[in-house]
Image 1 (cartoon, chains in turn purple, blue):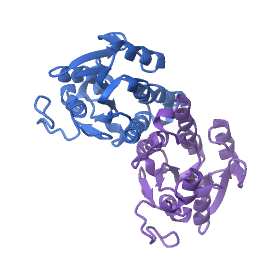
Image 2 (cartoon, helix red, strand yellow):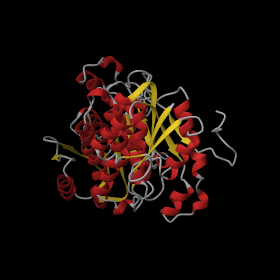
Image 3 (cartoon, one colour):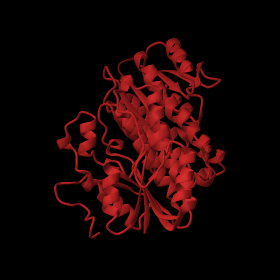
Image 4 (spheres, chains in turn orange, purple):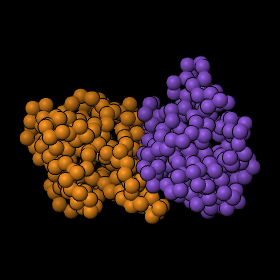
Length: 211
Length: 211
């Protein structure tokens, strides 16, 4: 099937695009690189992306920003960044992309482990990640034409921890996080929050190549 | 103890103020009525409210709006309403009110059952309610001086269902929903989402008068 991976040039998105490419036609969308480009904080960019990419069977989003900063230092603008980018960016991909998704297609959004497993500094992320999960549970009841929607909640990727100055050995390699996305795209369920990597113990949880 | 109930003139807030008044000094804050007035979508209103109400031991918020409308009819502005009002209104009460809360005091915010039990038309509420829960779990790790924070997730109140044109017999009388707020104010736990009324079977779940 034809899968559009928005954020497909990033840490997790690149691993998702790679995992899906074994069996599907993948279009990787980046901010400035990839097969196509879009900034999901701009609704017109989203409209142009879908007009250009044509009808697709599945849309995966691994793009969007939020702010990681101590509660006492978080500003109104910091919370707004997460709302505009990681939250409404993904919600607008669903709202504006839906007419371009084929019958029985799917959306897979990205929340994150801090939704339910917070840490000091995560209020901006915890709020937005939980919001995405709430939206997905509700939107699953109303999407037309058999279109499904799930959220994948990835554990920390090693590279992301490193980026934030934390111990990368506590994270998972992004290939391990990709399995949850494959499960969402290829499965039949909807309205789920799939904890990607959460139960990882060194063995594969979901086999990417033989689901 | 001294408890500020923001939204204390509303359906649920009025019942909460009443339940708390048995053992505490309650200041009820409304938009235009109550002991004091404030609009939590205006940060300056929140600052003035706390300056005037002086140091308090507990803050309960049962105020804030979001939009209930079919997914296909929800606009960017509809989602923004929930973000500005029910979500950031409550978050700003915590951010701006914290210096005015005494050591070992508490914040109790309001999410709602649609966070995890969505219905058609609830994407705006489901998103915001889940976001409040994510924020509360994270903020509990960082509030200073032993200050606690919980969210109460009320079941539908009969009056609210009636307001939205739904069957009021499916809802609960607001007095039954107040118990969860009393549990948050008087208990010792933090970072919780308390399902108020969720397990209600006609008997009291939490006794308001003898916790």
